[in-house]
View (tube, rainbow, N blue to C red):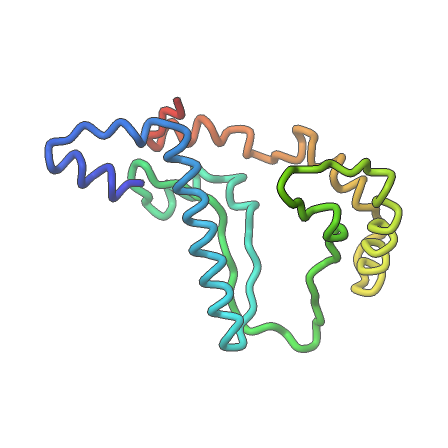
Length: 167
């Protein structure tokens, strides 16, 4: 949003849209869509990549380090490179389509209807790739605690310092 904000000010306007949560959300979604397209293009030429959401843990420091202007912020990072053929990888299993795909209306399936099958697939994947034994449910529970934020709890303050009022 920094470019849009600067152009508006330069032309004598008083941009107000950038003060709203919608502008922040739109810019974040746009960045994610652009990154996804970039990763698809990279994979089409034999590269691999991974998103790094952990960069938000230090959004202020990174914004300062790379000199981001007002109304610009760190959404995530992405590492792109040549995959190591000696370290096989794969996308971990996802819940069944009838859990996540909805037609006409959102329908919440009770967890007990699908979780056992998903946990079995999740644990098998982790075992196949030599990952620590844990359940998906445990991962979800851990990710809802404040300790998991690891600095991201300060993101609102960082965004406000970057110009967003988040009305």
